[in-house]
Image 1 (tube, one colour):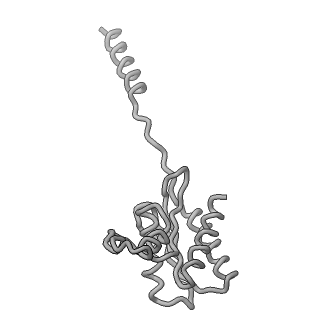
Image 2 (image 1 turned 45 degrees about the vertical axis):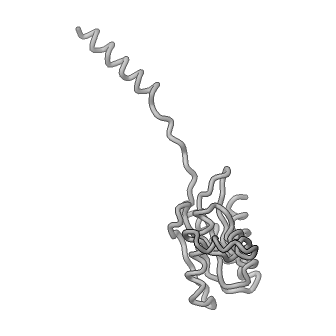
Length: 156
């Protein structure tokens, strides 16, 4: 009887090991990554002599970091968040929505969390969006360039 119990226990252990789910691993923006992004973006903004608000979000559009430069306007706080949320949720630069609107696609205005203004970029690793970054306060193309520099610094 004891042998039978041991055999059943061994079989259960074996089945557990064989049938265990292989959970996927997920990359995410940790504090070190956020600090790297923020420092690189700050340095690029200083180099370009512009005052911007910086925003970093996770892949679901949740705020991870927000910083307004002393000389940036108050409106840039919401603009940066909207650009970053668009980039996170849609997995593409917010510039794409601006280009669609410029081409006459008014539907972009009805998209949930749509914001047709350049300056937000997704942060992608292995083809997956793990977050986003946006800047607001300079010319839109400069906002985007600041974010691109920061993302490049992170992913190098």
